Image 1: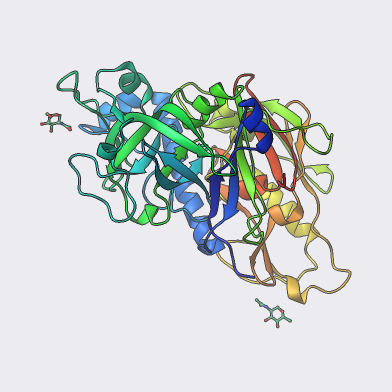
Image 2: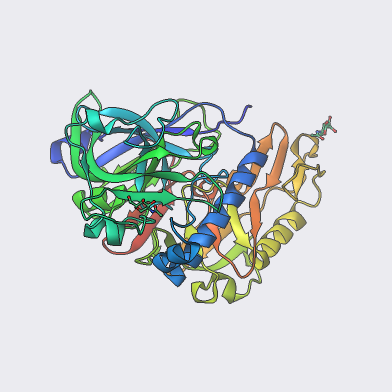
Length: 444
Ligand SMILES: *[C@@H]1O[C@H](CO)[C@@H](O)[C@H](O)[C@H]1NC(C)=O
Ligand SMILES: *[C@@H]1O[C@H](CO)[C@@H](O)[C@H](O)[C@H]1NC(C)=O
């Protein structure tokens, strides 16, 4: 079976929500086949570097870092595969009046929603672009506004006249193209099933006149699902009951399988299994969703992992990230997990499949050979994530499975990627600073 790449998210409201106006729901649809698992692993590494740098710069104060880097702005997500679009989820997003349509990467690690744009100045990027001049509802934000000064990440410190536009410059690293543009507000349109449209006013939107072309071949930009004043998720959640949720279908699911992204309370679930819940650890300077891991169990046994690995105060800690494919574990956790899993799978013939360290020829596996042991992630508050085996011993090509976690530096951040999150419903209750999750097939 060929690997599926990107999943396309289409904004759709649940039928029950149309009547109440209390929730909005987006459908997730598998899109075109994408890159190999090895390429995704590489993308994830770049993204991990970006997140780590962003957290480091946030701890030092991003404005100060911006000043130190000199002139323009600081590092951000854009180049080097941080957004290559492989193994990520896309949202169909309509913006402007009349609406212009885009496919955006759904990113819990991002605070600013932006689209490729033909705004004043920079050259028009190839492909689909937003034309602010054609939108009656587009309103630029000035560089002297509080939104620009306080909330827009990596806005340029340069504000020569108070009414000048609010410029931003996202760079992954020195010398990369990054994404530059101006910030404004516009209305976003959500498509209801049956074709009815609902508008959200004053969505903060970056209009990128330049961007790193390689990272954005598939996507037209990014929809911010991070925790920040200006993120789309925060704004939509504020309108729809304080929370948003998503359910990711198996990344290998057939093309017609759909997951969803929803704002507000969803329709009552068919089964009554209560969701597990744990605290969201939010940092006002960071869009990321921190969670407190207490232990990882393999085959029912808690692994021996030092507590510092899970301690954000000691440069460890864990975030949930929709934009990372493969889970990254800081060295001691990584080593403990692969040792436990590979010990259990010792009877299965191995095969080389870099960059993965432990891969198995599943075709050559003899009847009666060991099964993949159960893995569970224990969060604070007795919340336990028990992903299906295919979410951590993953199919990398027909007949070959690999232990699908990556090693991160130590001390360092661990990231729960979207494969480990698949086939679960995740509700980010921003109002109460909780995340709830439960197993789900993501069908409605
Ligand atoms: C700041 O703005 C001035 C006037 O628009 C411009 O000449 C200058 O190049 C800008 N500096 C930076 C670092 O963008
Ligand atoms: C797996 O084992 C089978 C049977 O021994 C063999 O034919 C096949 O080539 C192996 N696959 C890989 C990827 O090594």
